[in-house]
Amino acid sequence: MKIIVIIPTYNEKENINEIVAAVLAQHESLEVLIVDDNSPDGTADMVKKLQQNSSRIHLHQRAGKLGLGSAYREGYVIALEKDASYIVQMDADFSHNPKYLLDMIEMRESADVIIGSRYIKGISVLNWPLKRILLSYFANQYAKLITGVKVEDLTAGFKFISRKALEKVNLSKVKSNGYGFQIEMNYAFSSTGSTIAETPILFMDREHGVSKMNKEIILEALIGVWAFRFKDYRA
Image (cartoon, rainbow, N blue to C red; front, side):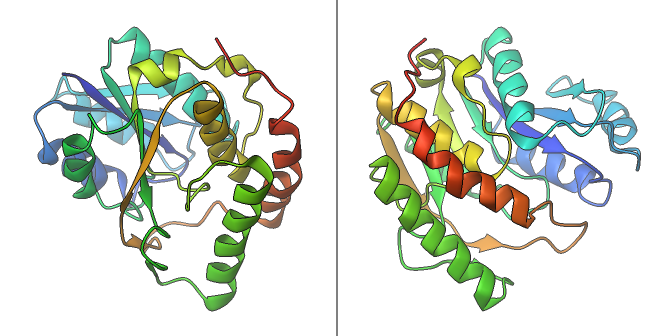
């Protein structure tokens, strides 16, 4: 079993060493693929140094800041080419605690896609202002209503995905690049017949670095969900 954890980065030098070490420490089958958008702070150079001591660390460098969605799409392709049995997507800033990877590994036979969910058991978020919690929660309820996908945390960025589920999706049809990417992928998985389960996590906002969230990303998601139901995502 090979599990490749995709971590997109842009200016994550304060987190990169620790997040890579923490992920690899969870299970011997885990490997890390850093997809770096030409971080001016030298994130990629730090990853190259880590690679000198481990064959379980991979780096894909891109020309510039091209967006979260495209980073994951490229990461998916690379992970499949490297014969990953499962692909994980998660953030570099410890908002997704690597300890939950063990829960996901244990659940791998129960569903094709496993989501680390902030909302499956109430609201499990730390260090967010109330305004942002409410925005995220109601955005999820809105997306669930429009798409019909029965998932409590449709915008979650922490996912454990089987190879089979990814191979069913035509990734060229997935166009969202920001907040809406997570919703679109969940809809693509659901509409191509993959099963989705959720496992509870405690989401903790980043302590180091700068959040990539902005109003444009949220607006893209709110408008974009209307288009998803008119697409055929089958590979």
